[in-house]
Structure formats: structure tokens, C-alpha cells
Length: 111
Length: 111
DNA sequence: TGCGTGTATGTCGAAATTGACATACGTTGC
DNA sequence: GCAACGTATGTCAATTTCGACATACACGCA
Image (tube, rainbow over all chains, first blue to last red; front, side, top):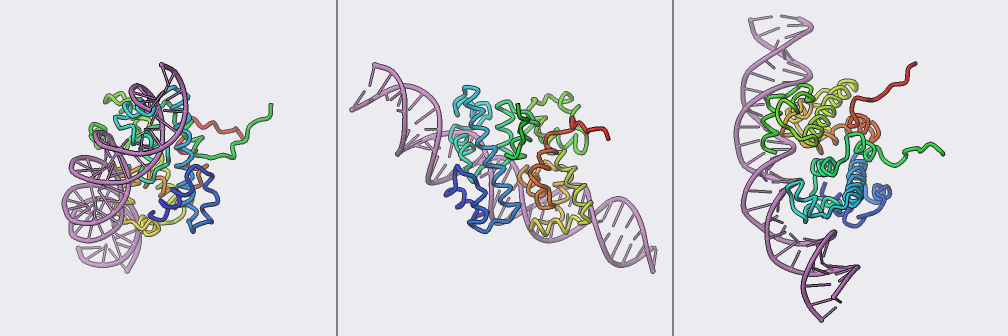
């Protein structure tokens, strides 16, 4: 969990798939990190979609703008709890959160 | 976040659906709690399925039997992080975890 | 009955996460 | 230029969560 932080710093904002091999992450470690990053990205999207600022969201969470920035930025100091709570707060349902967690390979029916 | 703990203490080990109304939980609060309980239950199932004891799992997590008991028991002191990490450790994939998070209304195709 | 195994519960110091604050960065409009 | 706004980053004391330990409970078996 210490090494993981470095990696995030350098890899911030990418697909983490490579980082796993780049540094020796166990499967569950890397899956966990990927999950968090996916959630973080989604939070930012949703917040903006709803026309909220980080400060707005912070108030709803009774937290601070700086923490929201860290949540969205995938900061190492942010727990999954806070991440998920934030998503619920911006209005996602369990189902929607689940979809984000499931990951990309979501197959879409062709029109 | 303070009140929520009380509730959990009293409600420990049930379906939380009612508790939401029983005590005045916000929607996202109750959804969050339900998620955690669903995950906790699932962890116990999976662990047993794999023929592991709590001690076994604890070692894999480099944690202790008592903490595993708390995780599975839905103890208030357990973070979502630890819960999800445990599930990954017993072998669940992101997809499978997502399913648990999504919740019950899972429609099953008739044979 | 006592013993071994698996699980639950309470407590505690240590470690991680938190909100808050200061402050820097970047953009937009004046 | 420089405000104003939104966002990022670093720090820190307070709170939460952690692993660990002790201990109690529940069961099956000799």
C-alpha cells in the first residue's frame, strides 16, 4: 500500500492496466486501484453533469473543496468509502455504481 | 455519521430496508449501509464455499481472525475498502463484486 | 466431562483517513 | 494588468479504522 501510492502519482489519469505489470502489483491490488480510479473519474463527470462545483459537492458531503479535489483526482489518501458516498451524494444509484465498478467491457447492443 | 453508528449497532445483522424508515436515514446513507451488508454476507458465503476459515482469510489479508469476523458481521468499524479487498482476496472479480453491489432486483432468465 | 476447532466480542495503541486551512494554479472577463 | 472563480496541492490535528490480543461462545468428538 505504500508503493501503490507512487504508482498512482505517476500514472494518474491513465489506464492502470499497464501499471500492474510495470510495478509488481498483485491481481487484487491492481483491480482495487482500477476500481477506485474508475469511480473517481465517474464522480467528476457526474458532478459536472449536474452543474455542481467541487465546493457545492463538498458542502453536501459536509467536507471541503480540497478533499473533493483529492477524491476526484484519485488521491491515495481517499478511501473507497468516501468515494462511494460521494457518488451516492451526486445521485448515483447502487446499480449505477455497480456498473462503474464492473468496468469497461460492458457490451452495448448494436443499434 | 455519528447517528449512523448507533443505528447499525441496534440493527446489526438484519435487513436494513426497514431501518431506513425506522430511524431517519437519508437515502444515500441507507443505500450505503445496504451495500455494505450485502457485501459482508457475500464474503462469508464465498469464504465458506472455498473451504477457508476466518483465520485462513485473515492470513491472506495479513489481518486477524477477529477482524475478519467483524468484516463478515457487518461491524460498524469496518470500511468499504477492507470489505472489497477481502472479496477480491477470496477471488471475486470486479464484475462479481459489481453484481453484489447492484443489489437484489437481479432478474434471472428462466431455464 | 473436557478438548479442539471455528467464530464472536471487547479493548487498545498504532496507522490511516478525515475536514479544514493556506496557498498555488489556470482560466475567463474586465 | 488583475480580480473572481474553480480547481489542485501540501500540511496538520482530530477522528476513524486497523491489526492484535484476550476472551467468550458454540459445536462436535472422544
